[in-house]
Length: 162
Image 1 (cartoon, rainbow, N blue to C red):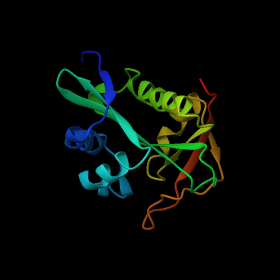
Image 2 (tube, rainbow, N blue to C red):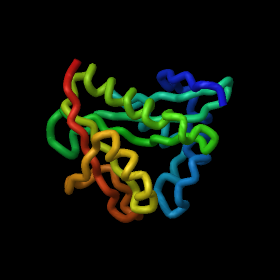
Image 3 (cartoon, rainbow, N blue to C red):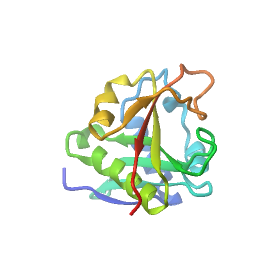
Image 4 (tube, rainbow, N blue to C red):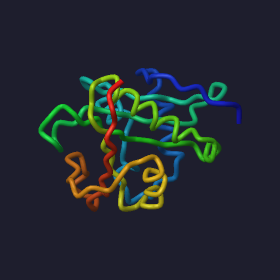
């Protein structure tokens, strides 16, 4: 695989973003598997939200989204990272770490004090990845949890402003 280029996601990327998510191999019991391109459009293009797409050649190989989250803290200091996925062919290349760092950069530049994310109970194998990046499990609820899925594990990382 050639090195992937990361760029902000745009509406023309929704099909590719969705394809990477579905190729990631998430357990079908997870709400992740029920995500549609319309869901992505609402999430990625709501006020203050966005994301990044990683492309190798012309093929999307990674993605991540983010959005401001007032629901967990009651303040504008939390940016939620969501929809992180890498295509199986891109695993082990540092792409996932680079996508997380992009969101952390957005958080710092935007004056957010922390980044929050939720891990599905069906994807707990990724917890060590986030912990290596400095995220810690918290007992905070996740306001965007799907009501038909078990409560996710919530992780938080404090970020400093640029």
